[in-house]
Length: 294
Length: 244
Image (tube, rainbow over all chains, first blue to last red; front, side, top):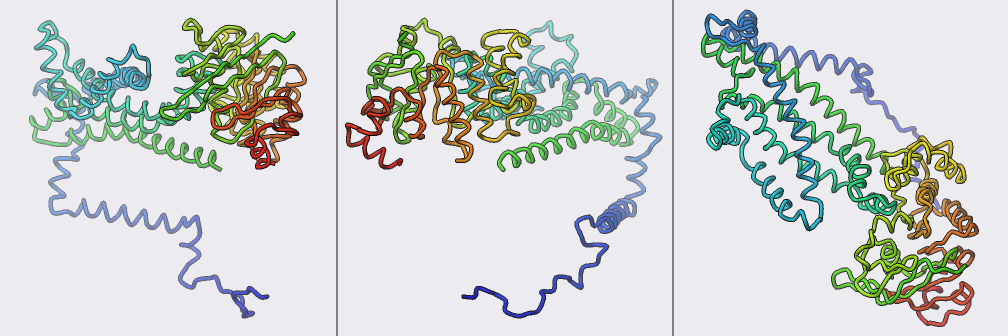
């Protein structure tokens, strides 16, 4: 019995006349270099030779204006972007720590089955529904103007403090969901094994469940932090002077937008390494999962 | 000495509408090995989990060392420090290396100092020939090695009773032997064990008593000789024919 599908003696031909050795193959270094160069040239040409190109370059990419905006000019009431940056930086640093703690506490409250915590569980659920549903900008207004109205002695508190409170409130709701998903993704067998060794519920959580949960959620967590870092600019709406506000003051004083571009550049400098790192972590996690499934 | 370690008396357990255990009675003495056999879903796992308070019972009593687990003063954490459990799917902690897997119980549950228990943990790993792998993570080990580490992890707590829940069911056939050999060795050393298993030859070799469970009912119990050579009940006979 013959099962041959091809009875001819001819050797199959595999080389395509349309594939050139320089552009083919897995490395294709020449191909990628050429295509990158072409794309870059096209983008730059489109911007440079656009009808309003000259005007835009003068008002958005003027290095002299950037320099002045960076250093400020007290005589004209122009605030230095240089000084504004620190407001954003300390705001997101403090917020991120608070969000981690508060978000974890919320997640824990929602997951635990202890009957004593029932009212807190209901509150935590309502909390995450509310703060994920209301725009951060509105929360900023409500906190920034509402809290001093509730307690008049808070009127002297600097706006960035209310900014930190707002960001913590809003982002904890998101981060608690991230943590919750991470905790629930740890197989139940891990809990059973830890409890079977006589570990208490809190030890099990701390030593077995959380370390694994955090590992799975580190990428989405960093995503939320990137978003949080950008949202520090919202404190400007309640009178906080930070990088975007300084740039905007420069813009409205001198009618030149270069300061805004500078501010945008600062955020890119801040967030791009973090986005890259997040993508790398996601890729690594994916690889690990694939390896584990094998 | 024939002191009773575990005593189940008319134990009943329900999950929603499903009655998983319908009045099971069983006694396990010190140094004794009892094998639970029966089809999947017959209640073997649930019975084991009732013995270390991973599950509470809905009826009847479970007593450990003469103390009823129904007593509200009994702490599940304390019970489980004395009753080890090994699972079908190993459940090693993937974020801890082999040594730390073994040390977690003594250090975190018994609050022993790490330095004081490390030597013993390494000696245990040596016994299963995995001392050199102490620093590696579980995913690097074969299934059989992982399961042997899981058994050793339980042993590090010096349990008075070891519960084993189909510990070879998730293994490649070629790896079953090394795990059963370890269990046989433990049985000869006098470890008190309650073993849910589908390995009939193993049960025949090491068990002092074999109990057959069918749909939550303990149909019959006896020496391996009695159960395997001369089963009294039709359902036992049918089950044994099916698995043979």
